[in-house]
Amino acid sequence: MTVQEASVLLRCVEARRIAPGELAVALARDKGKITRFVARLEASKLIKCQPNARDHRYSIITPTYRGKRLAKSLTRLFDQIRKELFAGVSRSDIQRLGETLPHLCENAKRIGSKRRIPGGRRKRLVPIAIPHPFPSGITDGQACASPSQKPRMQSLPKIPT
Image (cartoon, rainbow, N blue to C red; front, side):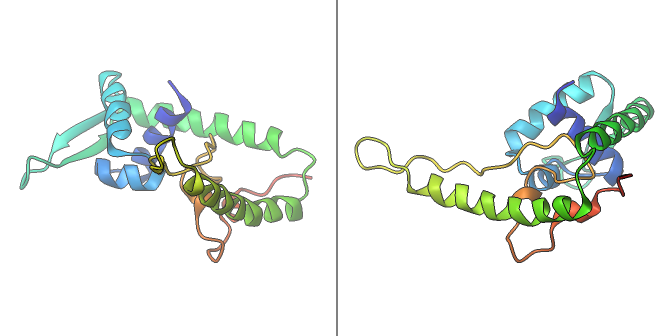
């Protein structure tokens, strides 16, 4: 299982019922990628994809019992990694990181939007997301929140110092 698939699974378990479009927005991924992740997770029997009763073009994703069990162990694993990653880092430094990342992301977007390809056309702009394997930390898309928004790092659990 990839980190991105784990992110999809954890988001599905957290939401209990979610549409692929909502997942795409929450994880800052395009719907095609989400569809591929969902297909792999469904093949592994970690989630179920059910067509909407009113409109069969839409589907609702729900975690299976097996998916919920795996999500619990993934959460514990990510929490342990987070603790190890932030060992020796002060809370004020973590807070400052949470305030700095959105600014860096906005700068990167601005730089990326200025790039041109030969022939004078602009390159297709791709949203920049900072991959982050920690579900309750900065997630994909959240790292690129506008600087005026509350920093996302505040959701990290207290780290023993």
